Amino acid sequence: MIKETIIRRCDKTAFVSICALIYFLPISIALVEWFVALPVLCFCIKKLTEILFRVFDVIKNKERNDKIRYCLKALLPVNNILTVSAMAYVLICFLSIFVSSYPQLSTRAFFGKILERVFLFFVFVESVNTEKRIKRFSLVLFVSVGLICINGFYQSIFTQGFIRGFSMMEGRLTSTFKHPNDFATYLIIPIFIVFNFLLSDVFLSQKKARLKSRNASLIRYAFMLLFAICILNLALTFSRGAYIGALVALLFMWFSKYCKLKVVLVSAALFLIGFSPLMAKMRNVSLISDSVHKEAIVPEKNKTEEEKRSELLTMGMGRIGFWKEALTSISRKPILGTGVNTYSKEAQKRGNWTGYYAHNCYLQMAAEIGLVGLASFLWMLFVLFKRACDKSISIKDRYLLILFQGALSGLVGFLVHAFFDTGFYSLQLNTLFWVFLGLVVSIMQVDKTALKREI
Image (cartoon, rainbow, N blue to C red; front, side, top):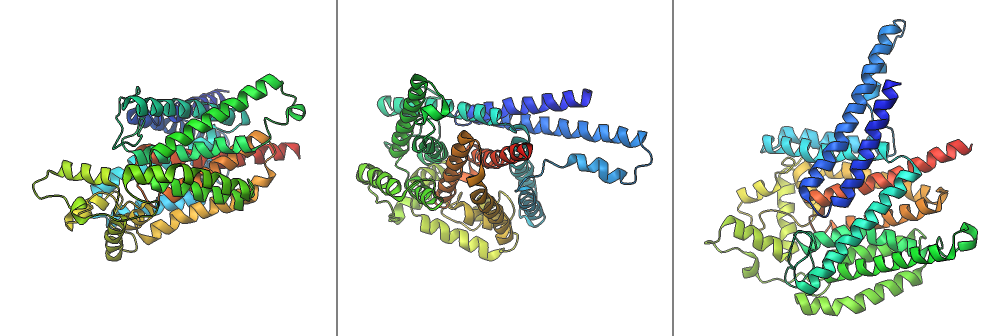
């Protein structure tokens, strides 16, 4: 009885913390750290409780042969489709510490970032484990996204947001984020979730669902309004990588039969015709341009390191140059890389003018944890999408199915944008990625459990 009470309270605390995490994720980095650490702590307490009670059970039952195995088994997380691949990724990251040029830096990054985020993924799957909890989580997400987008509109009118007081950057919206590209990355996943709800007939089939006409209409109008403000905020970030990511996500929806081709073509055409000319006017670039003057990206010798870094972060162009430098780093240590979180140090050591990020998460990952590490990460994604695309057609609950399809499509857009930017190396966006990875897996786990009950 005591064991069940402790485990139940740990799960509930972890769930509440995860809901708080998704709400405050775009608002405060400090709160993100707190609400990542709290569910992980609950997970550890839960596992410690399980192993202690198993030890007591072994002491009572001395005839048991597999005592050690029985006790250690309590430490394992709930098995899911990504357990093996996620553990493999963590193992490679851990091994890269031993070949790191900066072992202390890599160790701190491994335990404080990578391991903690993977733990968060497992905690999400274990604690957000019912239809009711998934639906509550999604409601908190919608409220948070709506608030952040309203702040973005306020920022576009008064040049400064009412949350955190961030200003626009060169005419581009940032809302509560430090850079427009980060804000755009954050918006991609919720946009496709809301878009999937609008495409579905869940609010149109009022007779079948036995919903009151008035309530169904209000819900639908709320989703339409949320979608409109999200799209406008995304557009006004003028983030080319996010635009491309969104277009690829639309193609994924058609390929996966989540929507018809005409919906993809009309949506893409309206967006590009409406905002590409405005982007060209605001940023003086086309959607696929990489043109940049050399003097614009080579910092002057009399500038401080902080000024150089600020200039490089706000510029966001000349990615081919960034990628060439990353490839140079990969070629020097291709197997296990230079170590987690060492890319900027290695770049500075070589006198690299890009200095901080490769602006391609996959190349930077390969530089830091090697081609083996990158392969383990891509294997995890392959397993997810292969199983998810097979599973999606059998999800029984209509709401969960739409949420699942939207999250999966949004992840595609997120991953494509990561090819052009630094999403995996932002604390907020990296956390967002692992949370939604957990959401997709959790929906499949919940549906699988419900199917077993029916049988």
